Amino acid sequence: MHTTHQYVVGAVHTQTIEGFWSIFKRSIVGSYHKVSAKYMPLSIAECQFKYNNRDNANIFGVVIQDAEAQKLATASGSWDIRQKTINPA
Image (tube, rainbow, N blue to C red):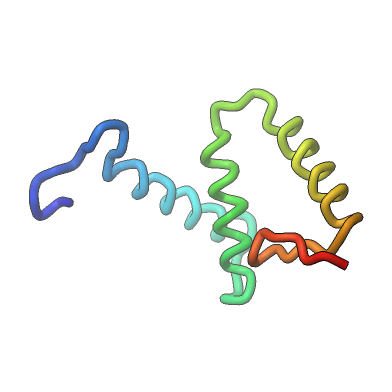
């Protein structure tokens, strides 16, 4: 997008993804210090959730609701975190 001098398309800015990766890199340096390739998708997903809910005053409530939904889902089968699917028991 930079080569075509197109920096904004609707609500999508090049600064949006650059800001996200900046926050992600800071979370590794500040909190995790080191992330293995095995757990990188989970670390990115966590940062993605935080970034997408940065203006949500009830972010903790959302986390609790999601945890309860996953608990109910896993009661009827196994939860595959990588596929985000439920495998029937």
